Amino acid sequence: MKKTMLAVCVGALLSSPAMAMQDSDSATAAQLEKLLQQMEQLQNRVAELEEQLAEEREKEVEKEVVIVKQDEDADNDSATSEAVAPRKRITNNTALAARVERLEEDVEAAQNAPISIGGAVRAQYVWEDYNDGNKDRGGDFDFDLLRIDYSGSIGDVILSAQYRWFQYMESVQHAWVGYNFDENWQGQLGITKVPFGITPYNSNSYFFSSNFYVGLEDDHDAGVKLRYRDPKWDFDIAFFKNDEQGGVDGYVSNRDDRYAYDPLGVRFEGEGIYDTPTLAVGESNSFAARFARKYALADDRSFEWGLSGQFGQMNDGVDDVGDRSAWAAHGVYSVDRWTFMGQVSQYEYDMDMANDGIVVGAYAFYDTIPSKATLYTANIAYSMPVKIGPITNLTFYNDYSLMTNKRGGGEDTVMNVLGMAVSAGGLYTYFDLVTGKNQPFIGGSMAGNSQDTNTRFNINIGYYF
Image 1 (cartoon, rainbow, N blue to C red):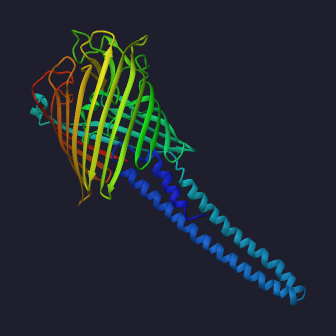
Image 2: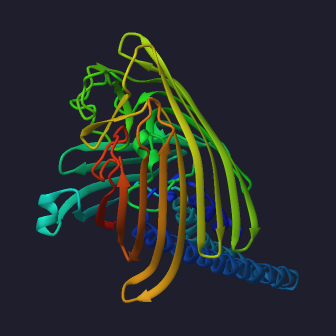
């Protein structure tokens, strides 16, 4: 067994997308560290036994030389000794070799660990200045979600899935199978992440950026994706047949019960911005591509820039009734403990009929977005390791989003999130002070025309396992 076995095992583990979960998960990191320690112990034991085996074989050679010399001068008694001694030596060495083989099998098995199950339980406190009842009560503390994650591999097939239960709905976040063609290329099939913009998130806070609310951040659809990764380049190209619920005629009870926002209908004149759409539509036959160039400027400095694009049809269950497209350019700069993120993106829906916007849905309610708009994001974060009881890290951040140039005019959508994330063992807590105008979950709508600014203070506490 070569000494490179441990490196191979670690490389295989770290290349698995199962080790790249989309939420901070200290418990998963602890499990990985424990597994790596066990593998290292196994490798050290294999090395010790191999050394012992080599010494035994060297002794055998020396003994055989003595036996040969004795054969030259001795009588038939020496032949009897030679007939017995080698048999005993073979028995001992076979037992040792079996132990080495068993440990080697254990190390090899560690490269293909069984499916692991993790997840999260989250609750949150909310205070809203735009909700008189909530404000008079001094805010509310509610259950947020229960989440179950599955990840790992069976043979050469990679598996990853996540399902979420909220108070008011349940939904799949992602569910795909994959295969590593080599150390750079990986394929994924199923409900997989749409490659677009800054990844894994164009934000630091619990609320994402405004891109999320128009379907351009952390969105997952049903299709196939090919990924390339090396130290300098990221490249993704994907085809999505439809959204995660099967498109406009998917077999679901409520099309707005979903984790991420998707276009679900056309908003006609006279309809309210939160109404169920009169004309239901869905994404169909979409293509997406993203590439990024990465630079390691120094041990504590890095930079990335990239471009993304999407294009696809909108279908009403019978015919294609329009097209959709989007593009983005992004940059990420990290120095020491600081991270700076910026992105500009634009989307457009070119529908065959006159409309007052596009109906989107998620989290059990409908909203409306303009059929065309431009979005800008600018984020800054500082990560500070600490030792305060169980607290090991504090991340301070400010995320800013602006949605402007809306087709049909109207007031801009603005959101600023000033916050801090606290890591303490399996607990990960967001403290967010959000100010917004025409922003969902901050008392508004992406298609709103309000000039008022609303404020929400939010504490989301999650235990990840």
